[in-house]
Length: 467
Image (cartoon, rainbow, N blue to C red):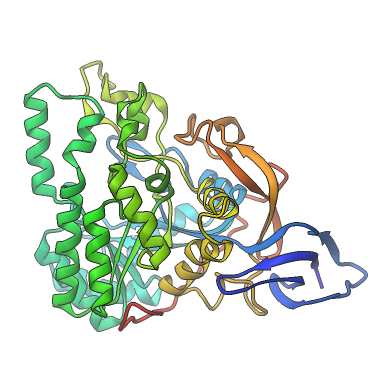
């Protein structure tokens, strides 16, 4: 026995109970009462604390080229930050380039990530090119490398049209893959951008207005209809609007395997942030929406129609955010020149656990959303997502009585600001173990660069909205 965590209260998606948890060879080897250590066992007393599975962030963009720059956190900084927030596995988006088979996309990004990651990771493929059969068939080659999940963008210049989206969905049905979608109406977004800029409306508020509730909601509805036509499952990422929530709920009630993810920023902030002095720091896509949408998202969490939490972690520096005022060449900027994205990988689990600690949701629901459901959806529940004998010893010790105010100087990424600055959370992780190895303790990262592993995920075929 290498590690023994004693006297804690274990929380899974289904149960809560007091027990000890033993670790050997990076796996959970026993769970029970009054377990006895060996002579060389490290013993940790978790009396009065919760013992939770490490979170799985199913949506990050590390070292990602976007908007004329690269997201601030590379694979080391991003996974270091994840560890310090109790997240022990991250899924990054490996974006396919034009003419690049998707299995080559995986190899290219693994060459960057493998030497740097501090916790375990895997990929989703960001699909950009299915113009011929070889590109489409490379989805199956990617699956053979352990990546059975793919994402299409309905927006941006590298996004796909509906025909290409439908081809990806039908191929996914054939091979047993999961398709995710960034749903926003690109054409309407572009029309609104042109209109607002012509009217001299250039600040961050108009980023929200050009990607408003209807711009996202229409695309959510259309994406669901395409999945129905293809007869396959669909995973809507970073759902932020009521129209989309209603469409997801209706499809699930009808028995369709439609799943949705939302992010903490949509649960805490509303579009009011785009009226702040540094509104540009909150620019992300999709943007935060109105209070009605936020209320709908919380209700969908309670009803189970939102299946997972993730962050869309994609940070940029304040100087880069300032490109919305003045571009690097000194010419005037506007809301379209602000790099899209915010930091969040270190804040997801603490925020959701804080909401549980305040009684808004249960701790079991927080674990379900942040660990167990992502593991099931993405095909790594044979390794992660719960505290069970035989699974990886990804463990978080959580102190319900530790009050914490989020400030950027307490965060562990490479970003120079956080949209969560000054937010108080009730309770906080005090230790994180990745496969039984201590990576975070009492506010400090104690892990190692390159200690994380690439996780090969298995294919999961969904015939209904139930797992």
